[in-house]
Length: 83
Image (cartoon, rainbow, N blue to C red; front, top):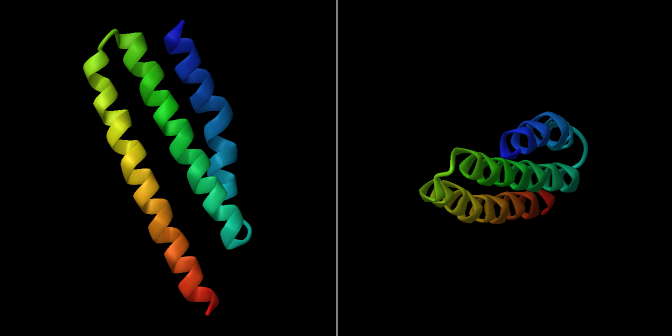
């Protein structure tokens, strides 16, 4: 069941998120970046549950922290470009 959920997330949510992060204004790209990060974390969590290995959840936890830091950097760069 978790494998199917992981594949559904990859097939259903990743392409629109990548499309959004590649097109449009800087704000739309930021939203797309956040969506890609969220989907990736959810895929990692469902893959961990599918494998039955709770120790793999540390990868998703680290990605959450790195994605947050990346969003802050991206936002800072957008602000610098608008000046």
